[in-house]
Length: 431
Image 1 (cartoon, rainbow, N blue to C red):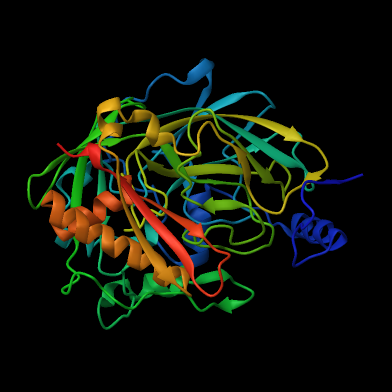
Image 2 (image 1 turned 45 degrees about the vertical axis):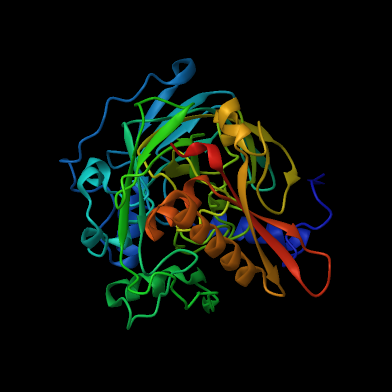
């Protein structure tokens, strides 16, 4: 008998329909030769991520925790679409650890050190989110739940980057007349389910920076470092800050519930598969839980973040190349509606703050009104203004700090008709 983890499970389908859809999907799966990235290329007509790029410089990976085997995401063992039919790159047993070597979210590699604002506009966004995997877990069947233990997360290089583009983020505008090169990407990224066609996106139209100029900020740290700070030296002003780090992966996912090819941008595009959730609490020591929709579950990972605030408001965290080690357990006959987790801390970056930093307190701003998205913008705008005024940062630097060290949260959602969204940034991070 199936055990249901929550009272509201897959609200759009019944228990019987869930099993039927999964079974039909498994029977309809076609044999696919080659790596998963080749499948993505054939389906969408784009150059496969990671194929034909032997010149990418890769740092020596740290030893895998507990003698785990390694899956190399810098070879052809990767993909950048979600699809049930992508073949597994490896199979692991329950309790067996495996290390994933992961590229950065924009697949820039070490060339990110010299990325310019103009260069942002020339990036091939069809290749965003190269993921390492998938890995099949022995014994995982549709109707089970997969436990993913995060054994270790550490950077492969000694730097990371934040990009700000006029197209993306909380204040971005995806209108093609503003930034034509992004038009094709935005059309693709709005597909949440191929069978349903295009869905209307909640795309903000306003921009806070007038010209909407792109921006790149580099952060430095030590290779293999997973505690302490990343160093910030403002690209515009030279202002310095120490950003508390808590490395994690923005994308952990299993194969989707439904057949089809899905972009990686929207999280949970088919069932509760996970995807681009960007949850900063999913750090080392976490146990993540995902529904299983296909035999083996087919788990993949990518989008390494050295540090991120809740909200990731400018659309990037401190992006970097990462090694992550995971261990798996199959919990039989248990269905959950969406990803769940047991995490070490509600705010893992707080561990990095020293007593002296904490003594300086936190900047705190609010946005109040009947619309949560509008309130979020108000809170972040107010924080940007405050950091510019009080710390002498440029607008872009302040926006980047909000994305990597600012926590956006709902403070109140019950007092009709207005809700409250807040943002905090630790004052002690600035030198």
